[in-house]
Image (cartoon, rainbow, N blue to C red; front, side, top):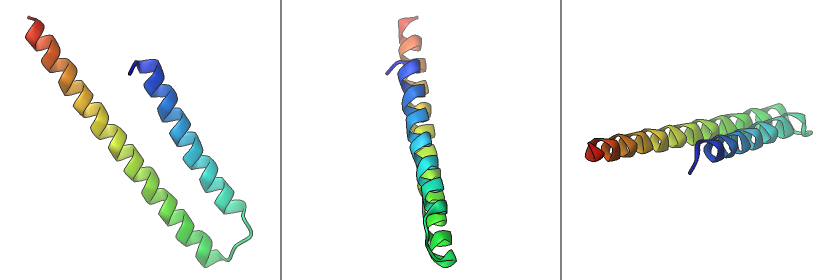
Amino acid sequence: MSNNTKESFIAFVLGGLFGLTFGILYAPKAGKEIRFNIKKIIKEIVETVNDLDEDFAENKCNVYESKKQEH
């Protein structure tokens, strides 16, 4: 995946998560339910960022190994 494609995908995912968060904040629900939903969304955002970080680290190692083998 090219850098441009990765950046676009990351922006799309984060934009969707933030949009979902704001949608929940403005939905007519009880405070307790909103807080529960916000905690759930924050947990999902953290998991997504961690997954992206792991993918990036794995990709970085693969690139390093392939460049190392070329020399």
